[in-house]
Image 1 (cartoon, rainbow, N blue to C red):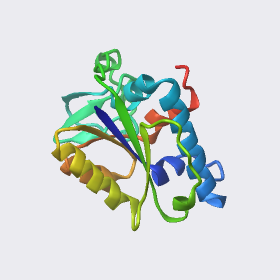
Image 2 (cartoon, rainbow, N blue to C red):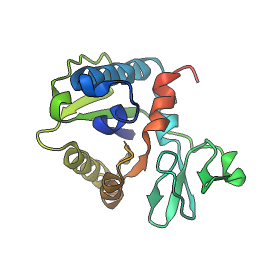
Image 3 (tube, one colour):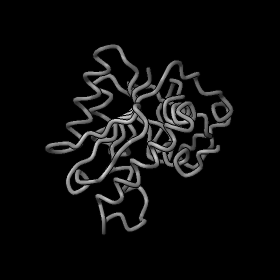
Length: 185
């Protein structure tokens, strides 16, 4: 099973749409979008955020890939490093995502009061007692420690390092936003 852990604050904050005026409302909209995609096309969500492969090298675009032990995780989209598209890897197919997907949305601060009622059993809402990063790192450690495949959606570099140290992978919010904003693609 692919476990996708979403850094709610980071994903919500990735777009300047007024979320800061109503953090709980923004978190509820994100939860609703995740729920709708999970109900309609969980495979599309899994492919968008978890259909990555590991390659060689080092890159800088945190939204497309993440550093992982000297290697890199490359999504099916073209990868741009220092303004140059890596054509050889741009056309590479993404890995098949086997089995079901589960999504954990971690909310913190004022977003914890978001009113959510997911229809999909694959969506879990975690309301972090303290900071969301610690909850995400702990969840990753528990799942990866049990041999599960974990992808955390965040652009927070410090959290990315914690996730990789715990045995998980990362991808940036744009990978998730693409499927949430255009679920038919």
